[in-house]
Amino acid sequence: MAATDVLKPDHAGARRHFIFTDEHEQLRESIHNFVVKELRPHAEKWEETTFEDWVFPRMGELGFLGLTYPEEYGGQGGDYYCALVLAEEMVHANCGGLGMGIAVHTDMATPPIHLFGTEQQKQDYLVPAIKGQKIACLGITEPDAGSDVAGIKTRAVKDGDEYVINGSKTYITNGHRADFIVLVTKTDVDAGYDGFTLFLVDMDSPGVIREKKLQKLGMHASDTALLAFQDVRVPESAVLGQIGKGFYHIMWELQGERMIGAAGAVAAAQHVFDRTLQYAQERTAFGRPISKFQVTRHKFAEMATKIEAARQLVYTTAWRFANGEYPVREISMAKLYASRIAVEVADECIQIHGGAGYMREYDVERVWRDLRLNRIGAGTDEVMLEVIGKSYGL
Ligand SMILES: Cc1cc2nc3c(=O)[nH]c(=O)nc-3n(C[C@H](O)[C@H](O)[C@H](O)COP(=O)(O)OP(=O)(O)OC[C@H]3O[C@@H](n4cnc5c(N)ncnc54)[C@H](O)[C@@H]3O)c2cc1C
Image 1 (cartoon, protein in one colour):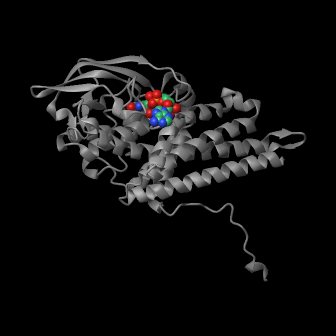
Image 2 (cartoon, protein in one colour):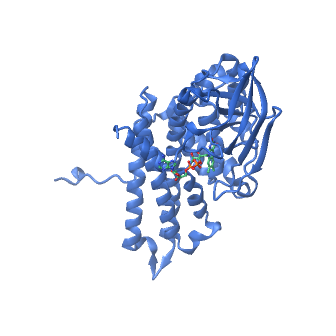
Image 3 (tube, protein in one colour):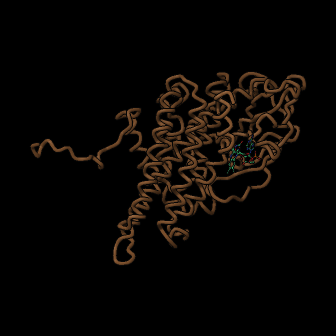
């Protein structure tokens, strides 16, 4: 065989997945540059203070809050993969709470307005949200109902041409800073899954009480609220989507939320892997870089394999989602698997760092603390397993 016929493994080749085009890569580069230059420098401070509200109008100005929304509402008119690119690049801020606060705004609270909202609601909420002038939050979870969404108790009762809302919501991301909430309520207690309705509620409405800011294991840069709704009066025009169809609306919303969460988890795992790889090549013990121990090399090989498997699952599922399928089983698998392997990777990266991994200074322990949420938020591992298992008729 001639020398030129020898095919060498192309480990360093660019690995752009087929779902992404040159335009996605340009978008990736511009988000990346913005994140590294304008957001990352504040990561340390925001752990203490939560991230500052100016991030919203700044990202709105750059077009990053409306990547997938139509241009007529101020969006960029991009495809679904643009949302993945944003979620992936936000991890380079080294600030999980920031990525979550933005994702709640762009990919959790506003999609139902775009899909189910009236033209007026789109003008009043979606347009300013895309500009970053109004901050959004999403209220599903209650003190007595998390996994069991159908168990929520917040009531919206018709009174003339208004609704009166009473109840409470907890663990609400952006809840302290938000201008409005997409709120899941029960409008008919006897109607089972057909008794739920979504509302768009202004957070400065009389009776909306932002109770305590909750202290957390990780995601410190995000604000997490306990909210109370006491005789909050909203007009009929505040109903989002169809009366009685709120459960189905929010289940649809959760699919998008889980996809974005999975994409972000894989990207965060890759980011901490890359940083740890560099560390392992620089740190020496027993006269050699720790990366030269076979046990360390195998740890990287295991992590890389898990990350790649999760990434392929996320991208393939995203491709199906973007092409009009509603692949709930695979979305649940992607969310479950990506969340799990991301936490495993972050844990192993702490181990490879040794004592440094336990120190805040090296910023690896924070990745683990932030990622630990992914196995709980937007549906726990156990709930994902239930969805997957039941999809086989079990
Ligand atoms: C930092 C943070 C931010 C959040 N942001 C938001 C937000 O912005 N908006 C919002 O609405 N919610 C938010 N959440 C809530 C989150 O989605 C819920 O915490 C999650 O869905 C789990 O609900 P729960 O906490 O009530 O746990 P529970 O439902 O009480 O579950 C407790 C345990 O029981 C298990 N379990 C429950 N049911 C089953 C079952 N059928 N089979 C097997 N095991 C089961 C669970 O898996 C879990 O291990 C946030 C949570 C956190 C921690």
